[in-house]
Length: 97
Image 1 (cartoon, helix red, strand yellow):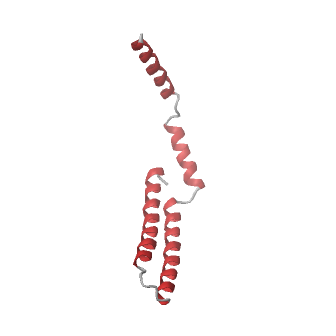
Image 2 (spheres, one colour; image 1 turned 90 degrees about the vertical axis):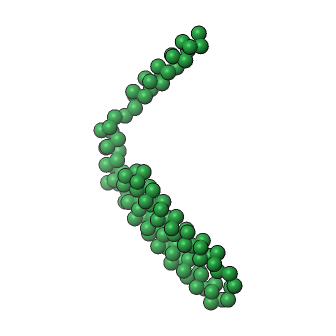
Image 3 (cartoon, one colour; image 1 turned 135 degrees about the vertical axis):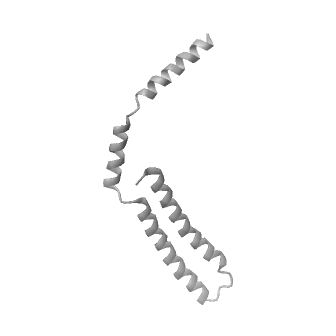
């Protein structure tokens, strides 16, 4: 009895899988994304540049004020900008934008 129920459930899953949109619909969705939104990589690079400029100004200010430990701030702002560059490349690769 359990075996028949399992086969029935698997066949229902197979029917649901055949109801998914086809390749032409996926290509149309990708084309719509490409025409509507600008590149995620361009956005990430712009954000990384903003993070870099803001971080440089804050680090320079703290350095001039005589704060003894700015190494953590330098690393934090650098890796924030680096993360944005990698996130943009990742999104570009995932969505194909």
